[in-house]
Length: 282
Ligand SMILES: [Zn+2]
Image (cartoon, rainbow, N blue to C red; front, side, top):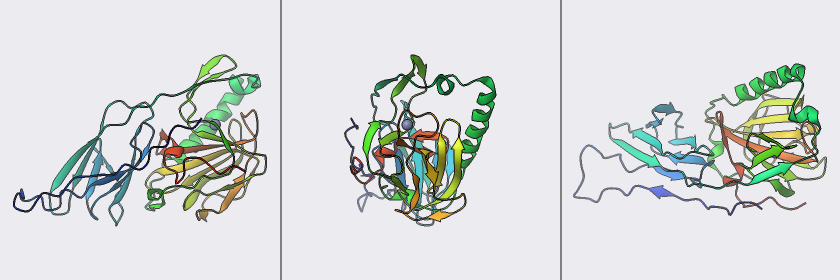
């Protein structure tokens, strides 16, 4: 089952009423946050152009229109602290307390052992491929395509949700940081928003055909187990463009798209950023 969708929660500090202005805070009150604000959620910030924004004391990119991004960790318990400095010198702070979630436990048996406990020579290849994926997630480009709700990238049925604790062939593994959409091999995969392709590799060991799309400001989405890629690295794609085909390459028990989302290296739940709660059925 997919988690009940939390609709966009928008919070905005009310402007100070006339007559009780505390000079020089003329710009304060221009910080708007949207996103589910649950653990694992992408949060979209909107403020004034030329404002400086710190997320937990680290500066983030702010677009010419005043848009910025941040993520909430899947298991984050403490608040994220935002500090905004406006062009006129006024400042504003905000604590973002993530809404807690509970995650499922998922047991998967019958996986070939070479995928659950890879031999040492293969582990080196996996490590190298993971470095390539991590580098693709470092991109901090100026586009703001991340700020609009995403489309589901393919049709099908959600077969595994984000955050599930995974036990593979009886061995506890890392949580499942993505959403699996089961669909027949060859089902088209579409870009869920405008993007630039930052990685496109046809045959990684664990992830098979692997694509990373950069949506700006460190927000990227990932597509794995693809049978075929339809884009190359460096190419710009538009929302709806076909980027690849569903497959079961790598560590998979059947054809599906594993759809991931990141804010830099932080793993996020893409199903909290979609226009509709579930993909269309094929
Ligand atoms: Zn998956």
